[in-house]
Image 1: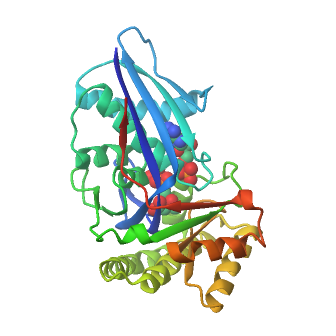
Image 2: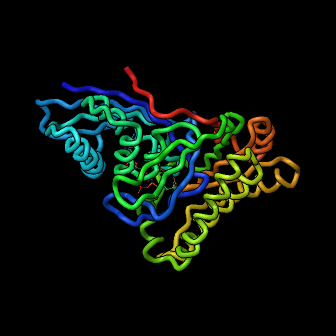
Length: 325
Ligand code: ADP
Ligand code: DP6
């Protein structure tokens, strides 16, 4: 029996990954940049055993159906190939994050699975190799191998597409991200399907792609210079552009709900009142607000006048993967 356990934290992109140039290898159309967070994470145990006759996948105590298990099996096939071992596995995972609600469970989930598999089979993969492996499960997962600010270099092939931590002189420790949980139920259009539909049908997609490298450069400069306003502005603008592409997809769709707009409007009001904070959203209606730690209490206090306090979660910068004994 070969057993490994790992924890991985979610990350939220400030410059988004939205679209693939290679669906099988999961190579993105553009570089992305994220912040790993401490509030939401996944813990996964993987056991490979000679006696197993198939892969099984338990998520939050529930045995998963064929479709969900197939996704895990395909990922485990990559692991088996690296290990040159033909063993089935039992995967037991717990999400301390709502699943498939636009809160990046796929990032923490697949990063934890990659790290636990590495541990179980003693593959001794480097963090870069782990990032490449996690990417094959879910693109954004390659960034969750590392803590703090992380850039995913899109690359041109399997070897050259992986994430690296960005040096920031620990500036991320001065920041917070406030989550407005508008809806924690599973979304209708997964990130995978949403980005595919957008790339293949949206006439707005080329505009998104043309701006992404400029936005990335602006964000990296802002991090280097610890310029919160510059980072916030480009984060908000980049997220809006990503969501703009979905409106021109065929058929069109949006991840926004009335409460998402309410949260965005609250951020604009706070800014008008002199508190610097900026929003971003992923493939779901929940809104994430980037704010300096020193202002996070004020932002939360105002949001409590609009939302139930149970809908508000404050996260700080989180670490990379952790091996659990
Ligand atoms: P999210 O916004 O939560 O990342 P996605 O639609 O992008 O939503 O991804 C959700 C998918 O990620 C799930 O359907 C499942 O395939 C995968 N996933 C989520 N949690 C885990 C986990 N703990 N272990 C393995 N896979 C997971
Ligand atoms: C909007 O990484 O979940 O959150 O690679 O198909 O598994 P797959 O997609 P996924 O997409 C994340 C999209 C996003 C933006 C981001 O995290 O960069």
